[in-house]
Image 1 (cartoon, rainbow, N blue to C red):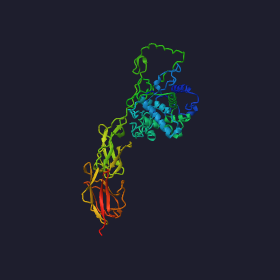
Image 2: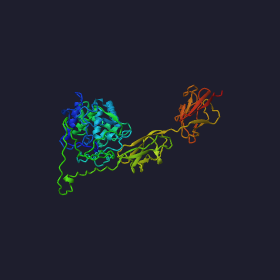
Image 3: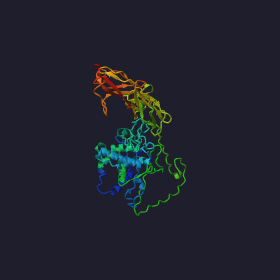
Image 4: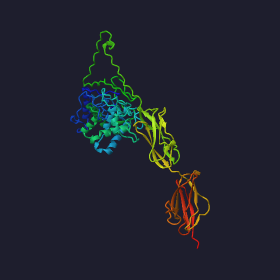
Length: 569
């Protein structure tokens, strides 16, 4: 689960005893009847001691994890015994973004699965054990780690054997899977349980909001009630099949239940130094194992002084041994560092594309721009990106093509060709995908709006007069937009009443439709010069003056008078 940048749990009685003692001490500080403290009968049996679980069905693939235990004096009872080790109240501090993610996950799940009774303190305990609370809260404003947190390759050598399931998309390893992110999901589990906890449209295991919500839903699976000790234990064991892991998580869970406080991002307490005295690696996101760490010595009982060991006698010089140090001591073996994975394509993301909107027939002023990103969050050059126009539209890229493939430059970005609107108005979609991969696409909404006119006027000044039963002379008008001819603009012609609020007139002059039926509303389109002509307007009804209204797309209007004369005697 957690990346191996700190002390790891060693199988054996010593660490188990330390963890059990910590649970006992913390449990004793609570009131009786706490429903979340497991008894031995609540804990499912683990496999044989020293066995390596397969990792199947575990969220983390049973990867290594941090084994540091909290101080035995609980946060709200500092100094309760002078015989307890004191490490300071900083251990109960949780980075602000990380704490907010845990609480938001609890709130979200309470709204959809209240019966689970997920406590955010359980997420905090797992986050502590898995990644030291996202490396002490080293996350950006959106909750994404500054560099990926990766566990070791699950190659069966000391860990579970899990071959690659994501082509290296999440973990940068195309041979074996690795646990990824603050909650250390293996890629195959993330593919099923991944969530979008911060509503940014992506499911990113390196984002604490996404990872915390995914962990919560995973723990609540199978109708579990985490208010019951047995269900809580089963949930934790489903994350990592180890009784020692369960005891470690339980210890932190009880500790956080006694009180926590918020600390600034990046200032959380990292796991303790390893036996070599080095701090965890917080840069590259990869970490080597440290199986040689030893448990700290237990404190002396109250009133019993700790004996001071006598210095050893001076050794007798002996023959030189290249494998020995001074005095015949064995030289420590130099650990072989785990190779850092090569950067591989992890995602394609938006690179600042603005609103995509254009008038029918025009080119879009904005162009789609994306950035290819590696598994380390860095720009990646020479990545092929395919842009596709989808939906019921006639918009297309230059040359009338609905797809275009372009390669990213040195800065990892690439811009799609110019997009041109067709004659069909409405919404459509542009998708950007890494060519030939199953990585999520970046999707953009685009809109084609109708051509508009902001003015329309009749051409000609002659009175429009006709005798009832005859036809009027052709009526012509010209539409403009910002002073220029507005070609191919929709114009609606309507015979209207002479009221304060005009409506369609059911008497007087009329048009005919294609079938020759009388109609009093007609839709036309201006020509390239912005002109429209209405012919065959039939005079009908009683003699008098009637009104013809022309309205353009864009709201410009003009009202034209039509005079109907009575037939001669």
